[in-house]
Image 1 (cartoon, rainbow, N blue to C red):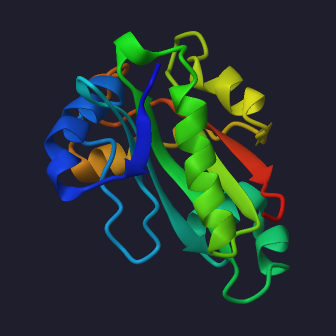
Image 2: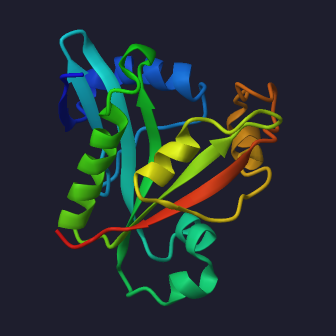
Amino acid sequence: MDALIRPLETADRPVVARLLDDTVGAGFWSFADDAGALSFVAAAEDGVVGVVIARLEPAGDADVRTVLGELAAASLRSGELILHVHQLAVAAAARRSGLALRLMSRAETEARRRGAGQAFAFGWLPAGRPEPDAVPFYEAAGYAARPDIADFYAASSVASGADCPYCGAPPCRCAARPFVKDLAPA
């Protein structure tokens, strides 16, 4: 699919919100608005057809410690940044066209440019359902799987009051599979 990968703009938010609500579920995502935000959209003739929402996290961040482990996270340089891919979604009509990989690559390239040496993401494992397409996607994109984390989304679903698209009312019982990738120097 012919699409331009560009930074997420404020005007894109309503379309991106609908895409993420449809793909991930309302209440299970948020926009990255801080200085470390690295969010991009895939824009085609018909409008926005894909999005990656990511941010640079400091080495001491709780999610970094969860993925890398306390010892590995403690061994990182003070102030070192890690790319955290929070959400990646492509409209149904544009899937299997390489857009997800292009979006991911754009975020990784920008993260490398800003000094990040690693990237990570959590793959959502729906309770009682087969592994979603995200699992083989992350592996194909060069990410290494870490051990699954049971009930990973439970606390955030309760805090937000969001209904899981798989479990229904909180708490969400879905697990997460962390994925990690070393980002080669640019």
